[in-house]
Length: 256
Length: 150
Picture 1 (cartoon, chains in turn red, blue):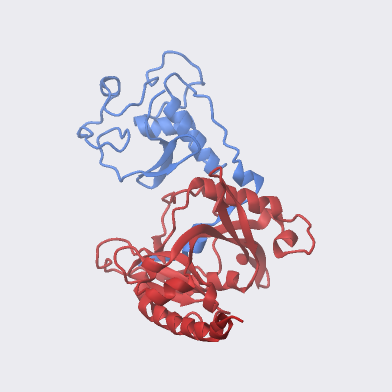
Picture 2 (cartoon, one colour; picture 1 turned 90 degrees about the vertical axis):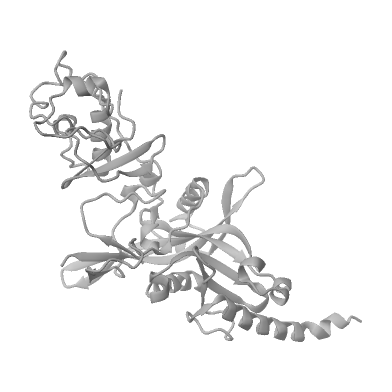
């Protein structure tokens, strides 16, 4: 988690236009300034914002905006939402780990295929915090996966409102509290292992291979939800789960 | 002891999807005096981010040119002393602007500080067309185009 010293300096985050960054969620905390500088003399970076192409960001904003508050059957959270209160956040890439790769690999980075961009979709809601006070909070209601077309443009590939949406945000916020994350420089990805029904937040350490993973519920119960683990430990468990899957599938391979 | 604010990467990357945020209503002000495009840009950017911004063109010019009289004349008044191009290190600026007594010659390249004071590096962002920068100076912030001049 980045720590900003409160000042009157304008913070131009890459690709972010200031008027669109509204408020802060109730999860924002204030801590006393440490009088000692970080060990490396630089700001702690924790989870760094990913750097998606501007075209995919704009496409995501337009695709989401075109669906927010528009009636559809069956209704969705996005279709019921106030279109003026919809935001996208947390752009991150999706990595797939196919079954064949699980068997043979010892490195998650080598085995996973990194693909499309995914965005969380938040709805801003007013929440009463005291008798005469209210606070904005951002609630994740969906996730948009953008795919690239043959014309090299981006379009909405999937709009997901399932349990992995809120779990993604929860995993990020839990990860940001971890000391090892706060000391590092991580990029967040979502790794999906369909063969064993595992979805996890994958924090790639930019300066080393000390990656961390937090499994999102409701993934395979063989992995504890939100428990941080190294990529090696994650792969070991996934490998065992995959062996079981292959064992389960073995009879069907015998043929007639 | 001051305060630090922890901001999640989720909150730092949040973007609106409304028509207003997709098509921001940026209004570029006409420059008030000759060669004042730098002041017009600064004031326009400041107004875009804060409708109540006090950084009008002439107040920006007062700060940047280290004068007090830039607001004393109506826009368009010709042949004023402060109708100057604002190009860092340009002979025009060096020769036409009074230099405060005891001030060192500017040697930094962060953008047009009169008086030679060393400045923090500007904070920059890519706008729709050009690159915009905000320059922290003392307790104030003002913004302008990285390349000054008409």
